[in-house]
Amino acid sequence: MATGEKSVMVVGIDDSEHSFYALQWTLDHFFTPSPAVSPFRLVIVHAKPTPSSAVGLAGPGAADVLPYVDVDLKKIAARVLESAKEICSAKSVNDVAVEAVEGDARNVLCEAVEKHHASILVLGSHGYGAIKRAVLGSVSDYCVHHAHCTVMIVKKPKIKH
Figure 1 (cartoon, rainbow, N blue to C red):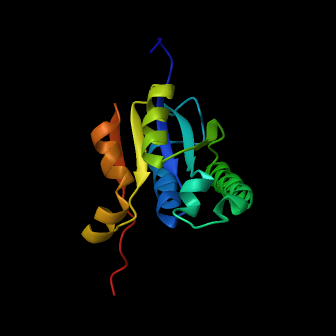
Figure 2 (figure 1 turned 120 degrees about the horizontal axis):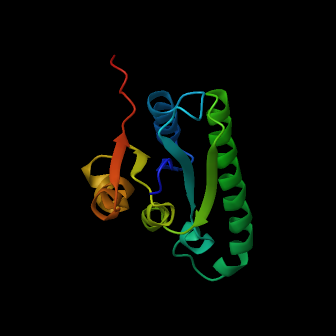
């Protein structure tokens, strides 16, 4: 890293409240309205699933729906990134790059860390239990073991009854 160049922080987001909470928490704790003061350059990455992975194992005719699924996935990605930009703007953090990359979130986020030479990756925790995590796989667990930087997992506090 050149002298005076900021470290890069990558925040991985999807369309869940957990990832938006993690983004807001990160902005509150690491960024100020003055970009000169913040030690990080912010890159927000959304992993857009491929149409075939979103459809899953389907029978005959699945190929007919793929173009429609792709359009919907692109709309979701655009909405997620627009929401992220609005959150940043509301916190007066305007020096932010956003990108949607097609692929599995685990690989997309680890590749984003490499591409941007990030020093930290921030992810929200969905709070899945052991069984769901075993079946679905944990993006954060994968990134903790494979990303070549510090990984911070932000958990949304549970509401006590």
